[in-house]
Length: 69
Image (tube, rainbow, N blue to C red):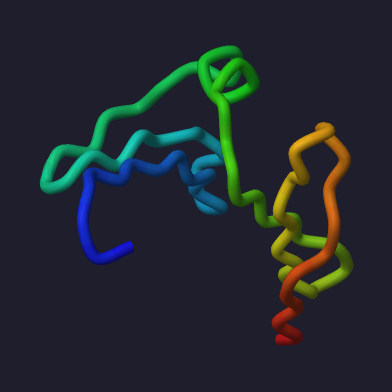
């Protein structure tokens, strides 16, 4: 993570819309764009908990971190 270019999609909890963050540019995107994105790090919010998962090579995911409110 020292080199390269990274972008992200984030769901805004206030307006329930997805946004694409690319350096200093933030643009709204449709749900379908996010669903088709090839993510390698996913975060899920479940009952007030934030859980990070990392997909394995075979497509399955494993829990790699958990942050509790």
